[in-house]
Length: 200
Image 1: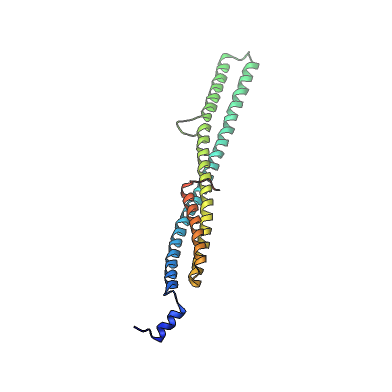
Image 2: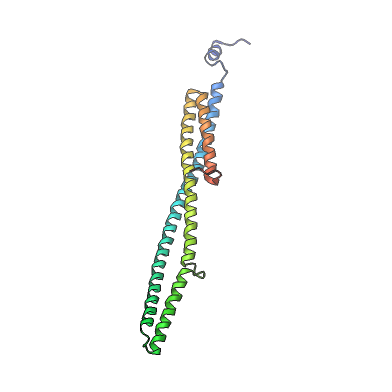
């Protein structure tokens, strides 16, 4: 069946038979998928940033508590040492006074020892050190995650821009560049969630 003048004109202006239109539709779907991946990655980045900040605050608080415990422990030890020096320099003290001072010395030493380690409350220096270092590990892990997410988000945004331009210009080269950047962004996003490779 012969074509009319309009069909001949469309064939001349679009010789690939609508290939550009199919390309544009597929590229538009691809942009939608990139937008979804960008949203997921952004959520991961926000969570990592919150975890990093929260863990950093917790670690700082625990170390401050540790320093306060250390200062008080030192005070009790110095007080015990002073009383021991007093006993050594005053052999003429009455037995009742000597016994009272020895009891205070014992109490100071016990308190100083309790500040060193207190498993029942988890607030001894030893326990606080473990907790603070755990918070630091969590902070450092979240920091590495956040770095991966930041780079991934930037690459996803560039990929979306390039894909959008490729739709307008029907440029397959821009689309392939966008796809390459999106692939790298996907790998970095996965690494942000699971830290499979030491990046950042």
